[in-house]
Image (tube, rainbow over all chains, first blue to last red; front, side, top):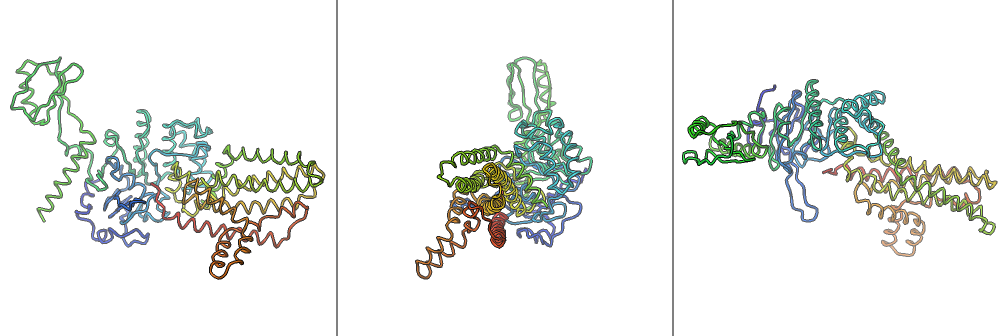
Length: 356
Length: 254
């Protein structure tokens, strides 16, 4: 596991490296004087992307002054609600969008150089393919585009089709593939040339539970062979199972970089107490704001929003001769995680301002 | 090298497209009908067969360009298949050149097939000696289609398929009458003349690729004509694709 929270210091308001700070806000030229550390797979400073409406000329910010480092060999989760700027970042890193200002390097190469994409594998969100090609033809084609020789590309294409469970369909045209199969093919296409950095935009999207498990296994396997994985997701258990660190993006701004555990700690914890049968219970005044009823399925449930008082609550329930069926810690939702990150970020900014 | 990979993929994609198969079958039927109708041409059956046969190669090729070529890049952008290509070490100009080269190769294959069918019909009619002039005419028709295709690729990279088709058709028609446009310019004084002449020079001079009248008489053209037409086509395509690449370079793919 890599050390934590290095990115917190690289936020615009934090302690950005002097060289990086000087370069932030400058458009990428490919000849930037800033050299990224060899330990970093991705280095982003001051990355901003604005869109201008063609008719109204109104400016919309997709990404604002993003500073982010992803270390080599780590699995890095990129989280945020829709429209937060996740896909924008990933597309800038892969050359599909041009940044308005700021710069980034991928495996040490500035992103405006085509060479920066040689050792990168990218899976776009909802990938689309050429209908008339077969699975093996498509993988051969993209492997060769990434610099593999013809014979190696054919071998790798066959191997990867088998690996993602499409080995028996290598001669079938892609228009006959199901949505899940196409997602698997997209993953194979991202990995067929054995990249050093994998950038995956919502890799679990459109997959059934078995497919999600397979993708998780593939990502873990890539981590074992030392590949850096940067992926965006909406599915918290996947992020929790895979990521060394995660970044939370809200409205185009980086709010926080931490481990999933740290993010969970930042959320208001809660515990669910479920009781036998449907009980008429009057919650005493001393538990106001601490206990909420959450009845479901003919049983009575209580949500304890201050777990420190759980013992006291259980004592009260026993005194009331109520049979407690279960006591379960509640996992925060992704939305709660985002809210907590935003609140912590605001609190952090206030603290920094006060100290200054 | 990467441009050739894109070209190969484009060629494969186009020849597997049912639109192309339909157009080729339509072309072969048209040649057959021309042969059947030739006895009604009052002794001009041979001339009619060659002329209509070569015209059908040009017009069917144009139909391929308008249906496939004008959507070649925009379809990839709409369907997002372009994400999987440009996120690899593929320079954008090479991508455009590859798309153009792939479709041009498919157009050459169609022209060759229809040209061979035309020659087979002529051979059946006892005029196998027309092979040389037919081959030259098919070569020039392919060059013409390559030029029109470069315009289609440029418009496709910058606009919607419908607008691209309209622009390409406009350039094709104007290109047919380039020489007339220059003559027309002479009727006007000063700046208006210069403007019309400039427009005529910007349009592709497609009459350079037309040797249907010669071929219908079974006569070959000169090596100089073939050379000039080849160099002109190469330069025109290079200019158009360079313009397209320059505009495509800064484009965002959302």
